[in-house]
Length: 320
Image 1: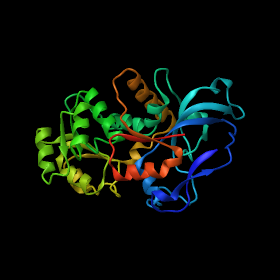
Image 2: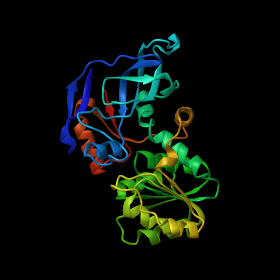
Image 3: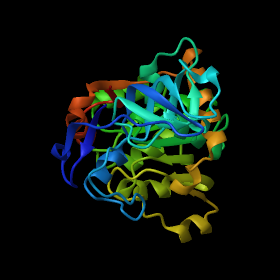
């Protein structure tokens, strides 16, 4: 099979095309002919050697944790009904033309949903849906979203608005700000402005009941004081290199409920439920998947460079 392999820790150039043996499904597993592969920012970080305490990895390895495709072969004890089904799945070594997955990791892609947006929802659709539930976004809540123009941020804007919240999105640059507004945000604030916290506070009408931080670092730390007393703050992202260094004493003193990356590690049944919910919202026309560019598998290194450069809005997806 064709694959893209990280041969050593380093820049995007270490991710190169290779040919590897086809995987063979074991008991309770299926073989997926991969159509599209999801990409997420953390994969570019792991490729550099970052985060070994969270993601212990040794090159050479094939990155990628989420795919969409068609079940082409069954392992022992797998019902025949899975053969030929269009699915998404969490996998290991997803940057490949074929992948093996347990049936418990599969989510059926409904009629009316193409495999391209389905792949783009494997991680971000699940996490975004889970986050608005976890933080109990409700009608009338004031919600501040960091990284609002990214793959997950664009979904969070729409999901929070659909729950009746007032939404303020943080992004950088006119094109990204325009997209955030187009997706339904009540306001979009440019974080490149030195006074962005004051602008965000004004747009929120004082403070945020919920802050969804998918960026981390100093930006996340600066956002914490914008949380209303008794509010909710989720520090779930670290594309800046670190999760937001949240002042837990300030949060406790002000009754702010904190959430982190561990809170969105959902069990398999929840992953399938949240993925199905995101799929249904897209099919119903209530959720739009924003895809910035699709790269062929053989150009996975270029895709990583684009993800790291943050030059595109929405998702970057690989086509097998």
